[in-house]
Length: 77
Image 1 (cartoon, helix red, strand yellow):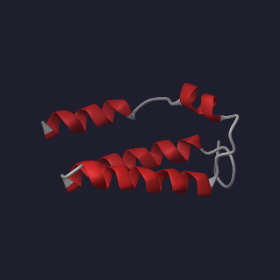
Image 2: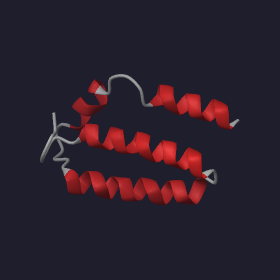
Image 3: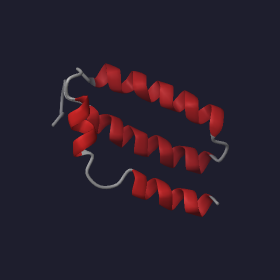
């Protein structure tokens, strides 16, 4: 099960997120908003995911996605 989950995560968060980013463009998303969203995601992962390695993989994937959604502040684009 864990092996399937890891490969599913890889395909879920790989590739272009252009359409998702475009849907978020009307909203100001900066570092603070990214960090607040990540805090919520970490809380949810801590409540639902037991395997620490899987939790780390998901956290890193969510962080990459959250950073990609930023359209305000340093290094966005």
